[in-house]
Image (cartoon, rainbow, N blue to C red; front, side):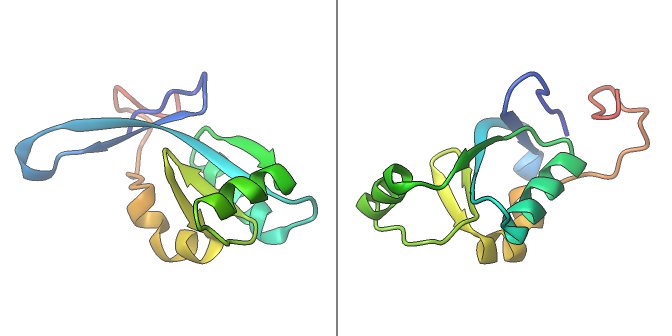
Length: 112
């Protein structure tokens, strides 16, 4: 799966229905200091070479989320315009990040 390592833009690709689609999305982890669940999400993203930015949960972010009727506690994973709770991340991470096994020999390899 191709990844743009220079920024926090992640390219999700799919070959479903004989078409090749690449979606470029920005990924953000909204976290708190000393939050083990926050660290778990960040570690997963780092280990899989998925670029992301991190924002610290504060009253401005909380207000923005409440205005969207989102009442999650950190960590909050933001992929594009969608927000996911920690529970969502655990349940859907293979769907959210379809990571292929790579030997390091492919043209778009994250190992290079």
